[in-house]
Length: 362
Image (cartoon, rainbow, N blue to C red; front, side):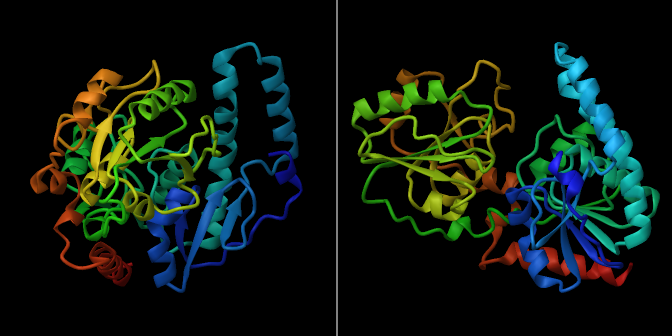
């Protein structure tokens, strides 16, 4: 943040389509739109400057930043203040900054792929106040802990996602069931590893690495798999916590979900949207929790028979010894309409057609 004070802020041209791309997952879910529209630009809040992405720096006011730092230091023994004082400052400062930015650049359309990141919430609020059209294309699965839909148009994965949001509150805009970009071609995936038993373990920042290491060590001793591929969330660095000839490590920031799922037969993960993607691709999905603090069945995958739950190594061994039972297509299509696709990239084309109609009416 301190170094950002001395960087020149990107100039955002007028009358462009803004695509908010704060993370790699955000960018991957909307890249097809960036590539399709020549007048679109990717925009992110903070972080390192990028040639392809316009960067808005949250902390350009030196005095404000100095005050924030002093308050942070004084309250450093207060857990609430440590976690929340900077959000309070950023919200107050960024609200005015975003309002001025919208007035100067006048975007014709803003596309979001994250509906709960607090900078995105500020941008959405100001866009609504200024009658700027907004579209929401989720980058991942959602739960009942998310805010209600306040976008003009929301392109959701499936009926389950719509049901989840409507339980939170009434949508302020139009809802369309389009399917997921991430999953749209997974049903056509050709497995590379049917001839060998390959286990995938997907790790996210909430997981306890020590617990995962212990599990992996036990699985190695079981000698049930010829290969184990451990995949880290894009926000995590690869940690080779256990070395063994059958263990490989990969990062979601370096290899696509399609490549990863083409290499494995069975997946183990905690609360993650990867369970749905695995099931669509024909990969057996098992949910295990690697943290004392977790919300059971956060996305409803266990209840809706997308993934099987294992509470222990013994339970896992029993699941692995049984024949693979894949979820019925009706369960999968409830979560993701793209399961019904009959052609490659069909979901992308469906969404682009809808955006074209929206642009004609702006």
